[in-house]
Amino acid sequence: ITVSFVIGLRWGVEGVAIAYIVAMALLAYPLFRLPFRLIELSLWVFIKALAPYVLATGVMATIVVLTSHALQIHGMGERTVMSVAVPVGIVSYLIAGWLIGFPVFVDLAELLGSKVTSFVDGRSLVEPRS
Image (cartoon, rainbow, N blue to C red):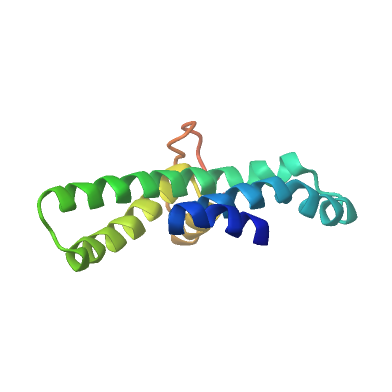
């Protein structure tokens, strides 16, 4: 990891960040291999469990970047951009989570007695109570 920092220094802060991401991506499988074997968890099951959250994060990041860019084009200052982008990010992540069907929203809907339908495949996320 330290080597990645040294390599990235040539390109400044962004270079260090990108080099760190690459280093961690290369190290992820070897670092997870032993603990996953100990608890009998396959990498595929792990990735499948994280996929909805990665998707929601990608949606949120895209919306925040587009919002920030639009505000900067219109001459808004850094504080204004940040003051708008953070709440937009929070709301977009929550909406994406709701549409994807995060378990916390399913549990909340079940608690409230609502019917929740997944945006992804149209299936009911909460079984009706008998």
